[in-house]
Picture 1: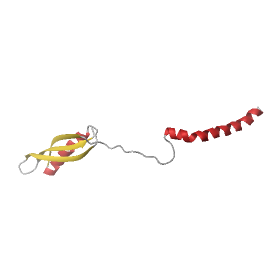
Picture 2: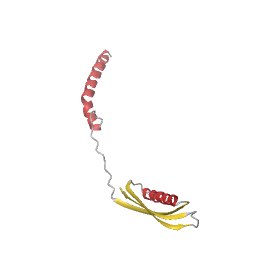
Picture 3: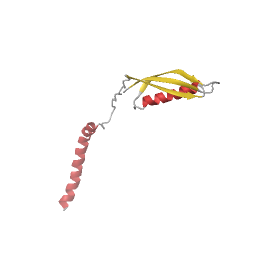
Picture 4: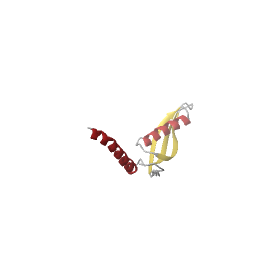
Length: 114
């Protein structure tokens, strides 16, 4: 039993030396190495043109156009894509007598990743 008590500290010293020697290689293999790392950003390619048209109404021309644009943008983004270069056009469909209600066709176009 005394021999075992003398061997345990020696084994601990040996194990510590092995761990210290292999730690840098293990860290590098797992990506946990110390020091600066270069991370390359992925650039999204906006190559797919998407267009949606929605008809919406409102108490002012601005409100009608904004409602139509919001619906059209939502339809484009419903595909779960990232888009840029948004453009919006609108055309009056109908205005109520007395200018109390407006209806517009609103078309939104964007370049998207998918």
